Image (cartoon, rainbow, N blue to C red; front, side, top):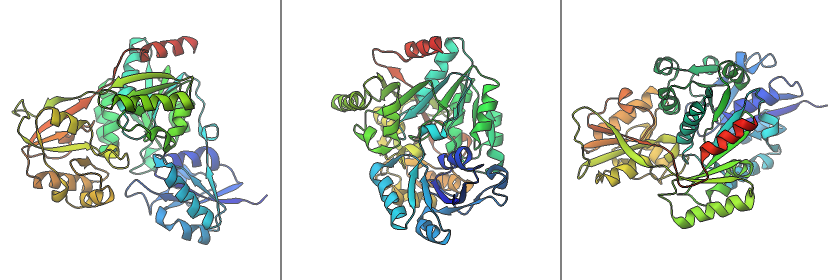
Length: 444
């Protein structure tokens, strides 16, 4: 049989996992290249030889996705594998059309081809879109498991922003671990809140090794998903979060609809902020596509939980710059997040940051024109953190309200009154997540 030549289209997460579990040790395929989108600073790098395996002694180059057609022709590619998340169904098919027009096959790998099997009970937390509220659901779930006398460990979806070789297996059990190993705001945002709860988080690049390490110190595995990707580990209980502020999106994005169709539990989050009609629309989608799923409605109230020392207790009448979680308001498509909601409720006057943006943030506002009233917390590099700090300094405001899960003033200097916003999950009525988790564990 002819050896098939492959390109994997990705964003530093699902692409590497698909390679590791499906192609790395299979001589019937040659992965000639990765292409990169969504994540900055990843293209023109390489998936290194220690991770790529014995069939790839020189590693595998990563190219910008813009070069896809050229690569298909020059590298004599047979098949292009699409392997990243939170992309509209229309955009997926536009990318497929590019591939087909260049003469290659277009492939999507599914759960049975890519999910790892665990010896422990596994609960996954996934979503239909970025920014639905997976993180507070994960934190609530970990708390429930502790209450039930279990020892859970979280495994986080990958964020391969730094040196791939040193990221094969990462373990975060303390804030010192995060400061030593992690390197971007985006990573710290995901790890800090879980570690602050007293739980351990594993992440990295090679999830076969990560799973083995996590199993050695846990009795339950919690998959903490990223974007709207499905789990890398086969769950016994699949929790999927939908967003009451974005009804209809649950069937419009890849692989969010896949998650909805596979879910055991669908949590309709932000039900207090979304319209009643929006919640009903999502319920109809669930009942149509996955009639056996348990539906839980929940709120995610935003509240100011911390102020820097000497800061006024009230934001009323103050000019406020709002800094939101980066992925939620960039490729997640949200015009604002919890910081904006909390600041408005507190009576602040919102200052638009766009005119004062510096460096990489100018490009971010150009790439995401829906962003007008909030500043995304982008920190993929020291340069971006510097641009964020400079943009804050240039913005005429009295206060900075930040709703990033990470404690932002520990990373950059903020020369304004600083207010931190947090948000948790609160269920509305029944059924209850704790009851479903208890039943799952009893059956397991």
